[in-house]
Amino acid sequence: MRRIIGTIACFILGPFFAWHGLSDLITASRAASWPTAQGVIQSVDVTEISGRRNTTTYTPVVKYSYEVGSASFAGDRIDYGGQGHSSMADAMGIAARYREGEHLPVHYNPKTPATAVLEVGTTTDNWLVLGVGVLMTGVGVILAVGIWRRLNSNDFAPSSGF
Image 1 (cartoon, rainbow, N blue to C red):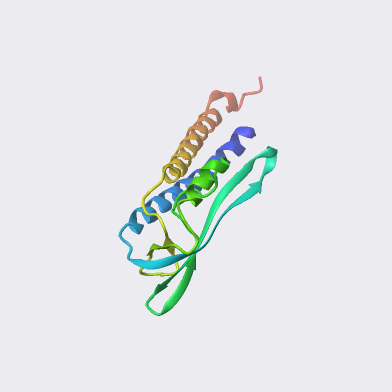
Image 2: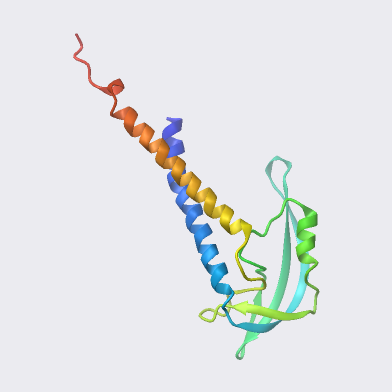
């Protein structure tokens, strides 16, 4: 029964992670060609979130504003990678790249200007999420094939009863 549940979980979660990773990879790649607008950093902080099993995640939070045409927008996405870090030093290092009141280019999606990012390009996190998704889907296929073979083997063949 565990094998069947594991197979189903891999078939649900694997494609989800693969799709999410691929989607972020494509968006991160396209963001490099997005137009830019002059932005202003409104605030810089690092948040701390305590999780299960005594884990803590540190996330750099950079809030900025920018204008496209006559419309004003606010954003907080730094890049298309994972935002949480297990190390306070890593999160602080990212946050330290920005200063409140600093003017800098903001890359925005020309189709939906409310979608913006400060740093363009793919990240290791993008590839990692895609890889986990592909791996989980592959494990699901291997488990499903094993279950299929077992169901079609002589172990489950009807006996004559004699």
